[in-house]
Amino acid sequence: MTVPGFLAVDSGGSGLRVVVGEVGGGRRSGPLSSGEPVRTGARGIDAGHFMERLAPMVRALAEKASVGELGTAVIGAAGLATLGDGLRAELPGALAREFGVRTVALVADAVTAYVGALGVRPGAVVAAGTGLIAIGTDLTGWRRADGWGHLLGDCGGGAWIGRAGLEAALRAYDGRDGGSGALLSCAEEQFGAMAGLPGQLYPRSDRPAVLAAFAPRVAECAPVDPVAAGILRTAARHMAESAVAVCPVTGEPQVALTGGLFKLGDPLLVPLHEELAKRLPHARPVPAEGDPLDGAVRIARDLAAGALVLPCDDAMLSVVSTKGQGAHF
Image 1: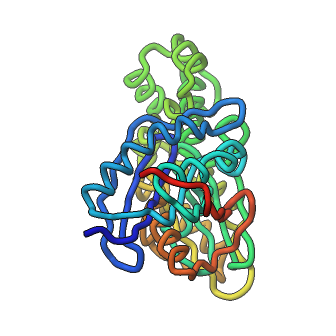
Image 2 (image 1 turned 180 degrees about the vertical axis):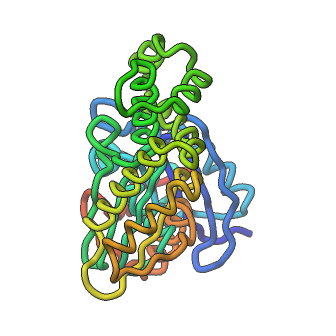
């Protein structure tokens, strides 16, 4: 016997993660992952490719979990705010036709990261991996800072740290001030001869990820190398500046950190906590409760129950009714 269900999706640079679950109940499937990210094209995120990747995953999960009609879907997607026009136009109808979805929430991945970390309460979240974005709300609207990509921003993120570490390595290689012999050794170990480094980086479409792969070496050197430690202190300052830009200024908002970059540990976290305490004395730091997929699940359950109180806007979180568009799931 099947029961009404929901669909929750986290779409990012590492691919899709998908969960289905019961509306009004605690049961949910384990996540199913796809390692291929959704393509982007002239209209931004490619809705056709999104459905091509998503549909077989949803069918497999729904059958295994004995979940029937997926009346509610929450799609958390990286790039939605700036690259989501095609997805907004095409995906709700496709979900209705394929699975009988009646209500779709299209959500920026920063919002699902926020809800996963803090739930539904005022505060700010710094989400840091290869890139970096900060998002905050007083529950009447959303504020975001940075998230502009590795060429224009993402200050303090993994690619930023890795690029700064490699610059210090090249300074040492050249004999310029500000170089780090320790980082030069790490760079040569990871990339080979420094003269060939530009050729390894500039032509690659995954350049941000390659840069971010050097961030752990910066953290590894930080306890004994002042240049590496200085890079992480500067990264912490950038993160705190973004948190200040989005955090509510009244009450006792909560502040959380989420994302794989924080696995770098104390060399980054110690200066970051110091910066946050100095710049946001009215805010209370708390550990993140969950990840962006957990946030998508929370939004889906609240939406299905008619209890969604998060602020909606076209860029960050929009809810679309798909009634009457048919289904053949």
